View 1 (tube, helix red, strand yellow):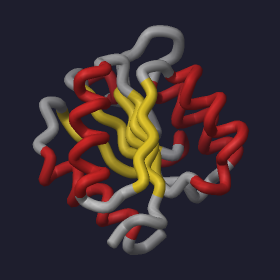
View 2 (cartoon, helix red, strand yellow; view 1 turned 135 degrees about the vertical axis):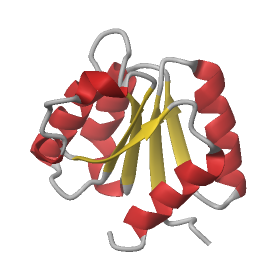
View 3 (tube, helix red, strand yellow; view 1 turned 45 degrees about the vertical axis):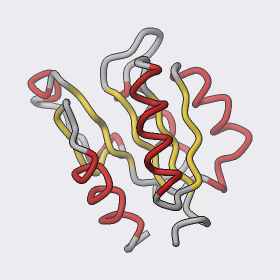
Length: 125
């Protein structure tokens, strides 16, 4: 169904990455998960043409999800980015679209909400 669509997950909560990755793979997505933004950036720098969507946490050590999105958006403008956060007020006043962020999901994110968001962008991407 979605085998050709590659979803990149980034969250410093490894249990969450593992859970979402397991479910999305069962739904037919090709999923690569990372617990650090640096791991995702390394992957992006070698595999950028194979990525279809990036889902990242907002608050992480090293760099934030916003910084990760901005870096990737500077290189690959068309890649949809979904940011997940429990602190949506920290995004107030930020031009999300300018940073490549197409959607914000507030944690805890229900799996159906996540899948609907992925589908929304992969159908038009």
